[in-house]
Length: 149
Image 1 (cartoon, rainbow, N blue to C red):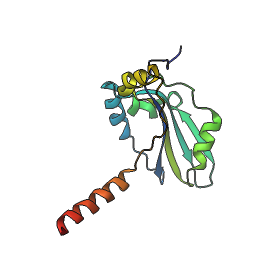
Image 2: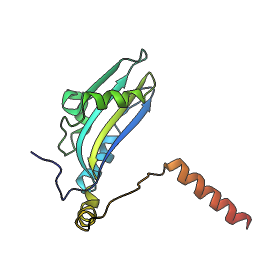
Image 3: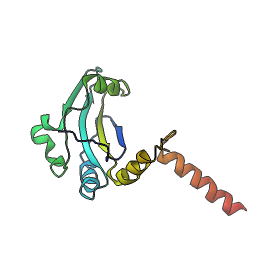
Image 4: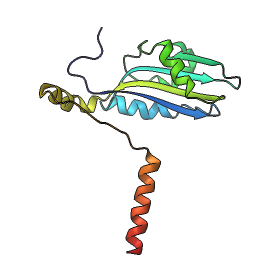
């Protein structure tokens, strides 16, 4: 079954790192909200653990058994889209004693716009996500400038 087709929205792959292996599962309800309101559609999701010796273990959601309970409300096509090479590439970004969530999702909210762009032969030529701390620094500087003006 094809989970992505010509009417799909853009697809992102995100690696979320949890230093000190402090993943507590509170991300699951937030992801579930995004899935349930149609904002995103999960295509694949893998947990990666790098122990203190640098050894890497990866588990698909379906491999976690009872530990996957916090993700029960996620509805998606979680499958084996991510390859072993993808997982090892992601693990290279992690320090020892770090866990991570590697997630591939469709931006369902943008499907209509993406389809219209493709139909008009439009092409995205640049895309960059600005990190939250950078945005907050710029906003803080602008606020400071406004106060001293």
